[in-house]
Image (cartoon, rainbow, N blue to C red; front, side, top):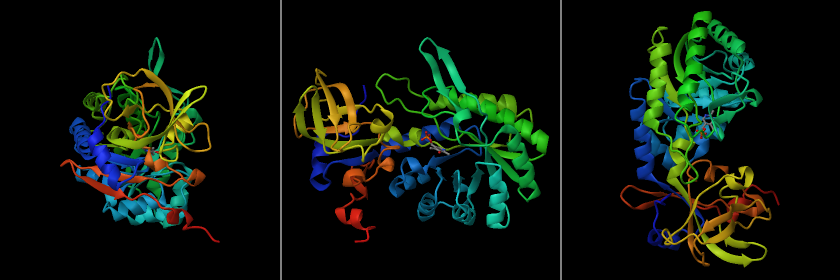
Length: 418
Ligand SMILES: *Cc1c(COP(=O)(O)O)cnc(C)c1O
């Protein structure tokens, strides 16, 4: 069972000040989860999580994570600017971008961020842009091929296609990049890779770590460069569906520790730091999209029309992603109705749920769409002239704080030339 962190009474009260739809985040959940991650990697003195800003680019959230010891992972100019305005600097910022414009490298360097280079050609581009290279620099590795884990009766637990992904350098390029960077003045090196997204397996990070640790040992020996950190990037997932396996971050941290002891320590790389750039794992379960049922429609199927739409949460429309829905106040009612829960875009893909078994829904019921804390609000857009919603924080003390107001038509018109 998935339980919402907001009650019907709370939602009703909030609605009076903040009309639905809105996104709301759970401070307690965010903090507890961030602490569990930190504890899982406490064996590594240099460990740091760099929250992937793109997942939830909201200062009120970034500040909570900063208080919990996290840095930020940025990949655009405005994400860097936001990090700066939230008080992050230097080693608290990773800059993992691709096809990077010069001005972004300039700002990243000015902030003292750890720059992660996506391609061999970026080495000279960075040097030309800055007139130097930073002393600490990271390179993104792409091992190619396919990446699979845990073959079982129902197929692979994890399967992805690095060989088809636009990111990162080949193994020979990685060594070339290190050598060239060292010639240009770099002193400390990091290795980064992102091989699979939204994994629900305690084996993903340890398997990725093994690949990166072996690569680090080999490249260090080959080039004489000092590898000072390994960045495991994002990809640890969350169970969007009830009953899906839950990642156990303590088990994941222990799996990475074992690989570190086996591979890095004997090679003399035992002082390397482990970095992560989790987005989804840090925030997804701690956000709900709260929306009101405003219409019901009975044609060839049963439809519930809600006041949110794919412009507020795009994942179901573009990936067919499952997001669990709870009808607030009907948590224990039998799910004896089958609905498509739909938004108002003139796009038939604008469906939060298809053939979903739910309790009977009446107009005016308030629905909580689960696991929208990451890649939810942030993927919002203005199609059909829809406006982005407010973002709220349910504080640990039970109070509610506005993190971002809802857009108004004036915001929508602000960039137009009449
Ligand atoms: C998107 C992204 C992440 C975060 O991914 P999650 O799946 O949200 O954990 C981390 N690093 C980079 C470079 C990314 O692009």
